[in-house]
Length: 430
Ligand code: ADP
Image 1 (cartoon, rainbow, N blue to C red):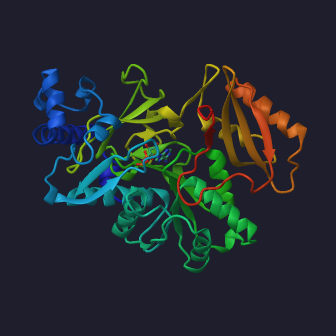
Image 2 (image 1 turned 60 degrees about the horizontal axis):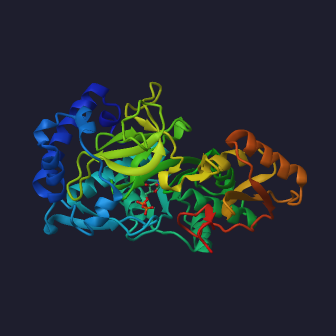
Image 3 (image 1 turned 120 degrees about the horizontal axis):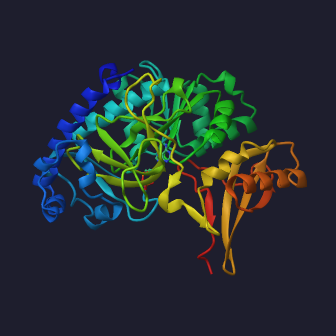
């Protein structure tokens, strides 16, 4: 563990710490950000009415649109001369949102990423192949700072240029790699195609995040790169990567949320009411220590559940894997659908690979989904039996009939370095 005293802090102490930090940050918001002052004033409340995290449901959510309406610096809580860095979201869903970091925020960023790296299996003295994009996106610089803090050697490759990535993996001998899961698939594929045996590479751990992924991809990447792969989650609005991290020796049980800095809630998508642990809803974060751009009950739009794990090596709460963003949820003939649900099923059918995409179309008033999925090398892409098995499994599990198209290996677009769109929505194209 990077900070055992914090990572294993008894829950009552953690709550006391969170409550004190929350009171502090709320005062900062009220004093420094007119937007938040108005939020409190409109409710007839003052920060001193909020005693701790249990009172958070009395306060409204902050949404992406609030950040956009205050673009670029309207929600900053520190004077310009105290801002040490500015980042922006990737803009996957529209105009980017801008966030500012003070020196102390950067210190916290390094700390939570260092914690995440250790949880993922990294140790001081190891080399990190950092294939997250450097730039406005928080992935590259975020992982870089945390790895440096931990005492690793960072290889700042950034995303893309797959040939160069493979050379570095072979010649520089990194023990740890971080990138998006879809790009890890690309790297695994390319190694295989070039006949490079991953067992000959020193890389042992892969830290994958920035987009939803399931065990299906984990298995492909672990086999294809000969690594232990774990999930890292984050978003620029809260800090960047390192908001939560799955432990390498607790795979499949969720990711620890570093809740001494980021207080999580899961709420009902429609009513906004807090949901009990274990129930799936929208993930909401309140930053407890951010100085540059603190956020109150930020509506991430990401769907997951929260649960404490009595068997975990750490005390912080775990979040389940993100199924998708609420606005990425497809509603097909009345059935809610995340692409990760199809991904999970692909894994249960032999001879298929997790290289797939969904094409959504409208025929008259009916929405249809075509699943395009690559077969394994040597398998028959014209197999009716394989097509039928996948169609039946999807129908029985999700309750939707989908068109299945088996594709030859290598025919579906790959990640070129960043996030990969797995859904092509042709409904609004006339
Ligand atoms: P953008 O919203 O423009 O993509 P970011 O680059 O900050 O901006 O990305 C944050 C978003 O990426 C999260 O809100 C979430 O939707 C997604 N994300 C990040 N990490 C993961 C992960 N491990 N699993 C699933 N989704 C993730």
